[in-house]
Image (cartoon, rainbow, N blue to C red; front, top):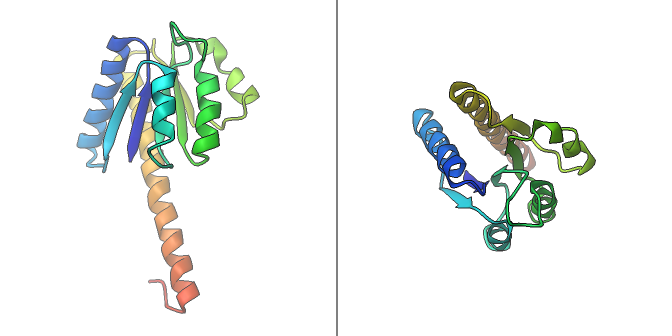
Length: 153
């Protein structure tokens, strides 16, 4: 699992990274890296060099940038169509816009909720993604076994 965070507020960035590290350790999930970016341009450079099927936590309002989280998400979709995109923001009024951009976001997490609720929502997102990955791996194993003429037990 590769996790990428786009957050311009360093305190929020560190909090999100800390919670994600804690969840990965508590649940013994495999995570190759957690990358943090404070500017969309930094994340854009990463997109071209690091493969697909990543997890992205995106802030919507990025101070000092013309690009908003929604535009970054559209760019991610072009390079990583199987990415998991989760918006993390204080602007819950932007929730309806996630549908207008057609980026298939997994979730929309409000930063203003309590720390325990915030962390719980992060856990639910990651649990869903880990379970989906295991399910996809089982399906691939069955299809490969059927293709090769083996019994997929």
